[in-house]
Amino acid sequence: MTYTANDEENKGRSTDNNNHRQMDYNDWLPVTASREAKWYYSAFHNVTAMVGAGVLGLPFAMSQLGWGPGLVAIIMSWAITFYSLWQMVQLHEAVPGKRLDRYPELGQEAFGPKLGYWIVMPQQLLVQIASDIVYNVTGGKSLKKFVELLFPNLEHIRQTYYILGFAALQLVLSQSPDFNSIKIVSLLAALMSFLYSMIASVASIAKGTEHRPSTYGVRGDTVASMVFDAFNGIGTIAFAFAGHSVVLEIQATIPSTPEVPSKKPMWKGVVVAYIIVIICYLFVAISGYWAFGAHVEDDVLISLERPAWLIAAANFMVFIHVIGSYQVFAMIVFDTIESYLVKTLKFTPSTTLRLVARSTYVG
Image (cartoon, rainbow, N blue to C red; front, side, top):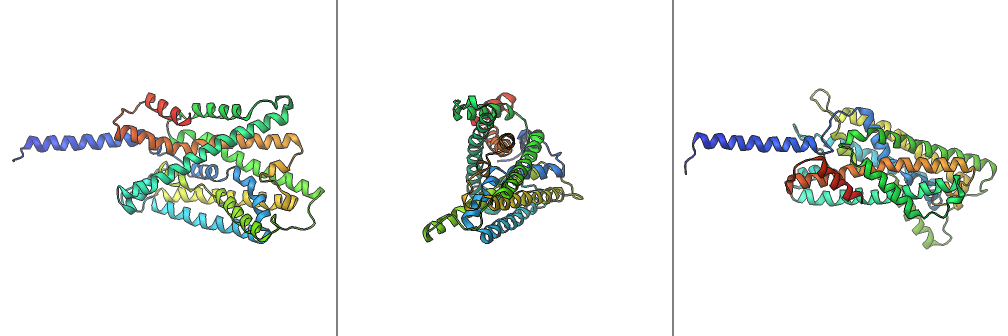
């Protein structure tokens, strides 16, 4: 079989068209549609992803581990995750001339196109989807607590309706086209996480100055219970540092040039974020355990019953925070769903497709 000049020309056009379509997909998909992020976007995106409502459980983890082991566990978790995050930032552009914008792409580079994708993608989606479910419930619970503290006559409203209200809000916010378009939501969420951490700390210190335990031990009174509590406490601390599953996607929104690769502004934002993280975590963990000892609740805000208006404000801040956290984690799910729809099922990229796909996920 012989090839003519026309065949070669048609083949070239076909290749160009395929490359053009691929480029158009990346220009439309939410993770890579906009690469205009600043270094401080990285800072508040990482704070939003990292400092969740789990920080309020750190005093409880301290009560399970004790002063020494508890502080060591928090500081070691901070150091280990700080180092592993540095590794992710470096790997984003480890291949010359190529950006690994998504975790599955890094998996493909490491383990091959098929094995790498199926090793990484299910694990990442499991984290993202499970986190969004937790945020849905936490958002509803926090809003319910806020309303009941300010309006006691509304205690009869079931928590289910608050969760549905949170989901309805997410239906609207989920139509944001790309990662950079939720920067204000993410900034507000990061600010709220810092503020409710400080409220929990200051209120605990105020409570502790009035009355605090004379001795500090652990919750368990038998060897078995102390062992199980220790594992539980370590798990609580580990969960509080669960923000790495969006690192590559956050870096994908930052521009990159040979002179200023994306890892430089990304790392600058990460350092700022991790300073904020350790401040929040140590303040809440130390003050909460100092004030209540082994009797602290699994959410330190529950132990802090007064003043009601301050606890109500903290619960409302948690509500605002998880709105942003939900969006940061959901954006990766949206990217995966929309990529499958347009690349594999050959749907045409459109606002309607995005509306249906994202609303289905939230629902």
